[in-house]
Amino acid sequence: MGPSPLHPMLNPRSVAVFGASHASDSVGAKVYANLLKAGFEGPIHPINPKHKTLNGKPCFASLADIKSHVDLAVIATPAHTVPEIIRQCGEAGTKNAIVLSAGFGEGGTAQKDLGDKLKDAANRGGVRLLGPNCVGLVRPWLGLDATFLKATTPKGGLALVSQSGALCSAISDWAEPNQLGFSALVSLGNALDIGFGDAVDALAIDPKTNAILLYVEGLRDASSFISAVRRATRTKPVVVLKVGRHSQSSKAAQTHTGALMGSDDVFDAALTRAGAVRVDTFGQLFAAAEILSANKRAHGNRLAIITNGGGAGVLAADRAGDLNVDLPPPSETTLKALDKQLPKYWSRSNPIDILGDAKPADYKAAIAAAMDDPAFDGVLVMLTPQAMTDATEVALEITETVTKQAKKPVLACWMGESSVSEGRKHLSSNGIPDFTTPERSVEAFSYLAQHHLNRQLALEAPGPLPNGAPPDLDGVRLIIRAALMDGRSMLSDIESKAVLRAFGIPVNLTLEAAEAKDALVAAETLGFPVAMKINSPRSRINPISAGSASAFPQPPNSIKAFMKSSLPPAPPNPTPKSAASPSKPWPISKTPASL
Image (cartoon, rainbow, N blue to C red; front, side):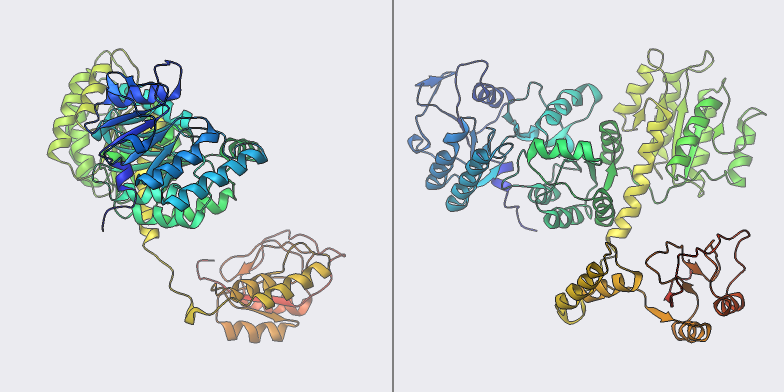
């Protein structure tokens, strides 16, 4: 692949700062100071007609006064001045700009009009815009900090793309004490031009980025977003924190950035098929980031839990049950190996409880056996502070064992603080992801399993529509109009499938049958198993298929006779037939054998 269209923005050779000043409380002053402090090696040009010099550097009245080419313009001036500045950028050949200023559509009509003017100026000049209403861009490996953030962002392999500038600020401040580093922090703000799709595509081919984190409030271009995520997940993990899942938070997010929210279930399904991992909380975002950025990979969801405390093991097992993480029993080979090393009363099950007086050698034996056991796709090692257990010595033993047998991901959970802090630091510094609670540890492994599964799903690309046939819009309108004339707000099963077929979406075949003999012919035509449903707008009944049965209103005797000969018996105490439900033909659907 060639360089991204955003390559000059992410890797500029020179920067100009509009609104740079001496005032300590101004955004322009802070951005200019951050650029100087971060160590950017290229020219940094302050632009402000009120000053002749700033920090010993010449200050220019306009971009045209700078005699050399400028790759990136960072704009921190009042909103009404920004469209004209963008026009000047286009004329000067500066094709990338970061607009930190707010006031372009977060509120009333006048602001939206100003946003339209800004976008129009950018389009005319061929200028790509990041923002407005954002905190800017950080590229730690370049020494580029074009933001007004307070904290210095450490170098690393994570890239964050966020619609919230405040979240960028919190993450930047949080990263260094938690030993996480970044290849990029990208604040999208209102995303009038550059959106998630553009940013993800650029970071997917960025050699410094190992994993991509996304904080999403709403999408302006869903198609671009999903396509970019799908491309990115083929080479590196993508973790998404999507807010606005409920009506109250959705309204708040729309007020914040002006982005529109869609159905959360639809977003979740699309994200899964694109290969990304979704999390629900800020803490989970970085638990996923820590485990995925460490280049740990699992090939399934079977976890071995090793612990010196039964209670801690139960907590981990409970969370595993919540997340559908499998805890298979150890193999016979593992049981025999551990019987030779561990005390007589160890659990002989999963979680592998090696008891409270476990020695470093006991941990070593348990980890080695679990890593060799084909029943497990990953290993979680837990330690609770005990008088007989040296947390630091165990950490040293684990590091040596994992280094020699790096066959599958190993996670650590050193519970407590003062007595385990040294051991925890040793684990982190040697590339073993460590967590402070059993629940967070299991969640981290679940992200590895989810990442593996979603990548497999992303490879199952649907085939092209046959012959590129256009959708039958007239037919769909007729179906919907007929339902509305009946006073209905919901389509029937047959009508819904007709609409889907009109758009070229494959669906299972459904036939109507008024009598038992018609049902038999339809079932033989489709082939078993089949599902039978009452075709009535007043009925809300679960499907009946070969191999399973659900409670439903009693059908006519002729239909009952057919069902009795073709399907397993219905469960006891079926729901009585409603006198208000008229008899209708029974639609019969061809269903997968799994149903």
